[in-house]
Length: 267
Length: 286
Ligand SMILES: Nc1ncnc2c1ncn2[C@@H]1O[C@H](COP(=O)(O)OP(=O)(O)OP(=O)(O)O)[C@@H](O)[C@H]1O
Ligand SMILES: Nc1ncnc2c1ncn2[C@@H]1O[C@H](COP(=O)(O)OP(=O)(O)O)[C@@H](O)[C@H]1O
Ligand SMILES: [Mg+2]
Ligand SMILES: [Mg+2]
Image 1 (tube, helix red, strand yellow):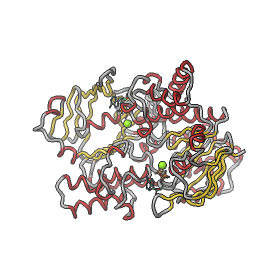
Image 2 (cartoon, helix red, strand yellow):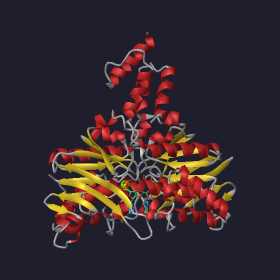
Image 3 (cartoon, rainbow over the protein chains, first blue to last red):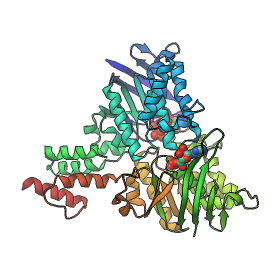
Image 4 (cartoon, rainbow over the protein chains, first blue to last red):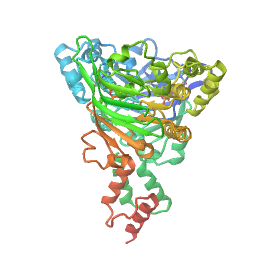
C-alpha cells in the first residue's frame, strides 16, 4: 500500500510554477532517491509534503489522511525531515536539548528520552558533543546533529534534503549504512541528493526536472542512462562509463556487469 | 608571498564551554599567484577555521598570519589602525553556508555590493556583478529576485558570484561545490581554473570530494584534528599510507581501477580508459 501519494500537485511561489503536474506514489518501506538540477523543485516538494507550503491544486495523502489544515499536525508526526541547511533547524541551547526538544513534544518518558539521545548521538558519531551549542559546530557536525534529532523521533517516513552534502567520506559512508538500517527497520525514506553514489542502494530513483518528474526507475537502469542524466544535469558515475562502453561494443558480460556494479558500491 | 601562517593556533572559548583548540600550530605558505590548492579533512578538523585566518576574519590565538604586507596576531587584530578591508579585497573568502553572506534585497545588489564597497562606481560594479553572475550560471531573470527566496544551490551561486565580482588576488572557497548539481559543479571548477590560468589568481578550495581534488588541485593540504598533517601533491596523498587514518579516501577513478585490476589475470599496462576497456575485452575472449 502507498504510504505517500501525490496527485497532480501544482505549486508556484510567483508567476513561474515550481511544481507542476507532479504525481508520485511511494510504498511503505520504500527507499526513494530524488535527484535533479538546482531549482528543479526538490526542496519545494518536501515542503509541500510536510505542509510547510500549501499546494495550489492537487492532492497529497499520507496513509489514509489527505493533507489539509486539519490533518497537517497528525501528518507531521509521521514524517521526520532534515533540511538542506541545518541552521534552520536548531532550537535547543545544546545538542542534547536540541535532540530532547522533539522528544518532549512527543511526550517520550524521561528514561527513554535519555536512551534515545544516547543511541542516535552515537549512531552519527556526535556523542562527545552533547553539551555543545549547535551554532558552534562545524557544517558537517551540524548535519549530523540534525540527523540524530530526526531519527530519535522514530518517524515512519524520513526525508533527507541533501543531508550529506557537507559530510566527509567516512561520514557519507556512515550515512549510507544508517539509511540501509532504516530500510531494514521498514522505514520509508525519501532522500534528496546531488551525489549519485548515494542512489546506488535505494529502491527507486526519481529524476526531477523543471518542477515535475522526468523519469523514475531502478538505480541499475536510471544511473546508466546517460542521455537522461545529461538532461537532469547529472554525470555518469565512473563504473558505469566502463559498463556503457563495453555494452555499446556488445561486449558486456554478466560477470563484468557484476564486477563493475560491485565496484560502484565501494564508492 | 600572499599568505604565510607561522605556528597559528586558534582556540574557541565561550562561556560555560570547555575551550576547543580548532587549529594547532599550523604553518604554511600560499603564493599570491598560480596556486590551485585543495584543503581537505574530516568534518570538524579545522578547515573552515583555518580558511577564516586567510583573510583576517579571525585572529590567531597564538602565532602570526602574514597576509600580504599585513601581520595579523592576537594583538594587531584588535589594533584599529590596522585596516582589514584591503586584505579582504585581495583575499576573497566564500563561506560554507551562503546564508552568512547574503543580505541585500536583490541578487544583483548583493553581488555588486563588494565592488561598490571597495570604491567602484555603480555602473562599473554592476558590470562586474553581471559578469560574475554569468560565470556561476545565473541569467538576467535572477537580477531582481531576493537572494533569500532562492533554492539552496542558487543561493550558493550568488554567494560565489559576490566574491568573484571583487576580483581578489587569492580566492578562498569553503565547500564551493556542495549543494550544486554535478554539471554545475564541473562548470564551476572549470570557471575557477580559467580564472586561475588567465589572471594567475591563486585558488584555495575546501572539499570532501576527492574527484575534484584529483582533477583540479595542484597541491593538497590535509587537516586532521586541528593539525596540518599533509602538504603535497594529490598523487602523493592518494598513495599515502595514512590516507585512511585521516578519514580521507581515493577518488572514484582510482577505486574503480583498483577493483578492475583485482579481476584481471594480466596486469594493466596503461590506466587509460580505452586501454582498460581493451584489457577487459581481451581477457573475455582468451
Ligand atoms: N522562498 C522562495 N520564494 C520564491 N521562489 C523560490 C523560493 N524557494 C525556491 N524558489 C524557487 O523555486 C524553484 C524550486 O526551488 P527548490 O528550492 O525546490 O529547488 P531544489 O530542487 O531544492 O534546488 P537545489 O538543488 O538548489 O536545492 C527555484 O526556481 C527557486 O528559485
Ligand atoms: N564558533 C565556534 N565556537 C566554538 N567552536 C567552534 C566554532 N566553530 C567551529 N568550532 C569547533 O572547531 C572545530 C573545527 O571546526 P571547523 O573549522 O568548522 O571544521 P571543518 O570546517 O573542518 O569542518 C570543531 O570541533 C568545531 O566544533
Ligand atoms: Mg533544495
Ligand atoms: Mg567547514
